[in-house]
Length: 117
Image (cartoon, rainbow, N blue to C red; front, side, top):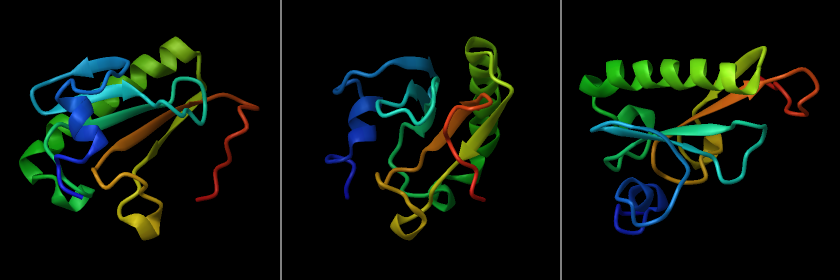
C-alpha cells in the first residue's frame, strides 16, 4: 500500500475526520473507531512507515514520550487499573493497516479483553 491509499496517512493529513487526542509535528494520537475497550486509542506516525522497524530511530524518543503521555491521560480519564501497549508488525502478526501504529488499551477488571501473550 502506498501513502496515497493509506487511511492513517489520510487521517494525519486531515482528509478523514478523527477524534484527535494529541498532535505533534511527527505523530498523531486518535481514539480507535472500533475500540476493543473504552478509551482504546492509537499513536500513529504522520509519515508512512509500514512497521516499527521502518520508523527512523531518530523518532523513537518522541514516540515513547507520546505513548507515555497518552497512557497516563487514558489511565486517569478511564479510571483504569492498567493498560496494554500493542503494536502488530506485518500481516502475519495481525497488522490490519500497513502503517505503523501503537494501540493503547486502558484496562479495568471485567472489561472483556483477554491477555493472551
